[in-house]
Amino acid sequence: MLSNNMGHGFMGRGAMIPRKLKPFLCRMLSGYKPKNDIKDSYKILGLEEGCSLDDVRNSYRNLAKKYHPDSSSGMADSKAFIRVEEAYRVVLNDLEAKQISDPSEEEEDQFKSKSLQHRHYLSFEGVGIGTPSQREKQYMQFRVDRATEQVLQYRQQRLENRYAGSDLSRAEDVRQSKKVKITQAVERLVEDLIQESMAKGDFDNLSGKGKPLQKFSDSPHIDPMTHNLNRILIDNGYQPEWILLQKEIRETIELLRKSIVASRRKLGEPMTLSEQKQWGRVCEQFAEDIRKLNKRVDNFNLVVPILSRQMVHFSTDKEILRAQKTYEAVMEKVSDSDTKENEGEEGKRFGWKSSLFKWLKLTLK
Image (tube, rainbow, N blue to C red; front, side, top):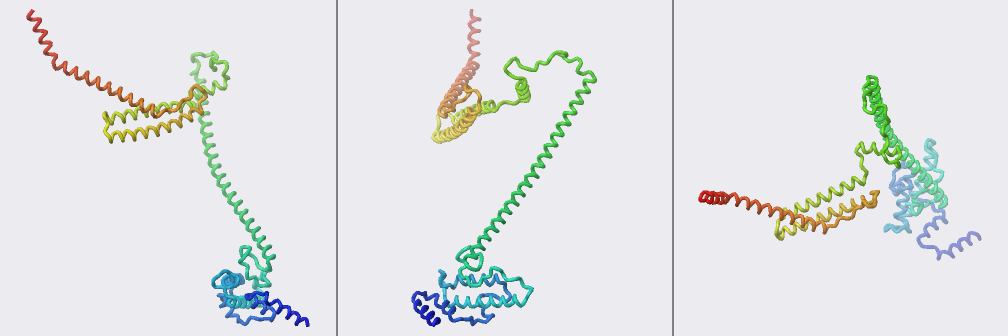
């Protein structure tokens, strides 16, 4: 009665079972056993006898992706998948029998799947075997191991970088220590020479002997330390940054003014069409140089300590107009000098005639 009821129950629900799953259910209910022999099973999986368990699982997983009816592969075939599954069962049983008969082989993996999992590739990055919950635990452990390995690699790399940096710092310390030793040796040598000169009496006849040294300036608002530091800096040719910037800006603008006047003199007067284009390019380059110079002026205004010493930007138009006026003044001077030279030459040429007339007038009187 129980078997009949079960049979009627399955038959009553047969309409709800998909066609693709009916072969699997039939094999489960009928106690189906695979008919493939061992050699054919290895051939179906594309393996050779003596392969490892991991090779068998990888081959089965790849074939399942290709032939499983639920996959989106164009080669999906339920009959081919059934043959692959049967071959997989036979190969697993063969490997298990070999491991039992040969005690030298490693023990079977403790996470060996008792039921075939042909959807390993659908989740958990293909890691783990067994039921979904078992595979999830295995995947979590796999992630922990991977994270631990990455942390260890990071620490190892950081230590390597630290030791490399320590080697460089150690070499720098050695160089600094050598410099300090040389400086101390020079100081000792100078001190010995001073003591030797004092013993010989070279310092007995110095001017100002027995009088106090004038250490400080006349300003009472400057403390001795600041005065000494300023004196040392001045003696060694030190200049503040804003002084150097101011000097550099003045020298640069003078060079730019001379260069644009020289370019204008080369073109001459009046200018042809090609010379006018060349003058336009010269003015564009001059404007770019003025823009760069104005950036230096901004940097100078940021560091200058006195507000009244700040500088304004240079105007390109005003500088070009100034260069034009300078050029005109130079040309006037050149023309005046030319006229004077011409007059001098004419005077030299006709001077003997005037002197002859003067001599004649004097003799006739």
